[in-house]
Length: 356
Ligand SMILES: Cc1cc2nc3c(=O)[nH]c(=O)nc-3n(C[C@H](O)[C@H](O)[C@H](O)COP(=O)(O)OP(=O)(O)OC[C@H]3O[C@@H](n4cnc5c(N)ncnc54)[C@H](O)[C@@H]3O)c2cc1C
Image 1 (cartoon, rainbow, N blue to C red):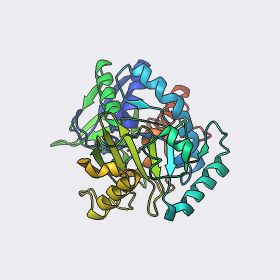
Image 2 (image 1 turned 90 degrees about the horizontal axis):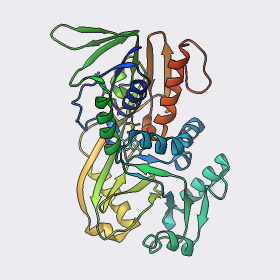
Image 3 (image 1 turned 90 degrees about the vertical axis):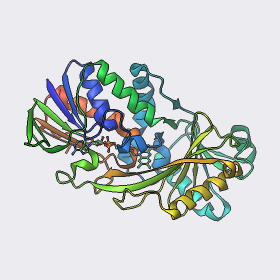
Image 4 (image 1 turned 180 degrees about the vertical axis):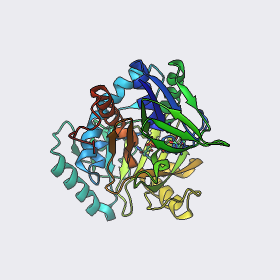
């Protein structure tokens, strides 16, 4: 089939790749350059944490996210690129004043998801010290979710761009899509350009506003280089306003994130958010005090009213959106589901799961 994908974020790139591998002719449209890091997918911390997210996310997100824990390693193997992937688990910690939140987290995670001891363990100070000695200086307890993982979103995005080009994708970069119809993409030009396909897959995230009730949810995060910190697992800190996380990356780098604010404001990180993120990081490990703030990232997550992902399929057009704060966590499952719709060729069918 001759297939167009509008939007080269994580879901657009994954779908383009799988379709090319199956022998389809694929054309990608994006408003940014191929090597631009402007999309939301580049901002993501890359956490694959279905159980921790389960505290607040819908059961559907948890189910899709569990699939990712097995599926991402397979995909990265197939991609054959040097993508940072870490599967060392999450440690959830809380300071004394936030013990109530910690208790609520544990009740939600153990109660709702019926995890066994292999998947979820409560650690005392000695057990924590064995796993992450430097965290035990500040915390006496932790919840440990050993299966959770994370990856480097930048390396995944650029590995996918390279792969698509190797597989001879047609990529319209720096091209604004102004409208999408069944089998048709209209792009901006001095006169509108009409491009025709057997199928269009709309993956524009927030760019699909007007066609879907999608809204942006602002997230801010900081990149810190901290040679005095040696934390090797993902850390989630209970915090009264949002769950803060510390994500280790190679080379003494840590991502500290992320705020969650109902706003489509793309401006620089606020002083309040920077103060909260930095003081939280310092409260996790005093070594962050001597770290260097390399940069801040701000983006808006594409969310639908129920904060769940959606695939809308009709003849000649599939819309995929609402990945919200879980784009990396759920994109393998969403991709597999879209590939199934295309393979079955029955776009009108009522599907279990995601299809509307
Ligand atoms: C601070 C922060 C931290 C995050 N951390 C995580 C995390 O740890 N784990 C996780 O799973 N998720 C995380 N996320 C969420 C994740 O980033 C998103 O869910 C994901 O990026 C959404 O992917 P997408 O492909 O749907 O959209 P996008 O990445 O927004 O891609 C859409 C693409 O469409 C293009 N486009 C839009 N409109 C047009 C148009 N009219 N014409 C042409 N092109 C267009 C854009 O240029 C863009 O490239 C985080 C998000 C933020 C902001």
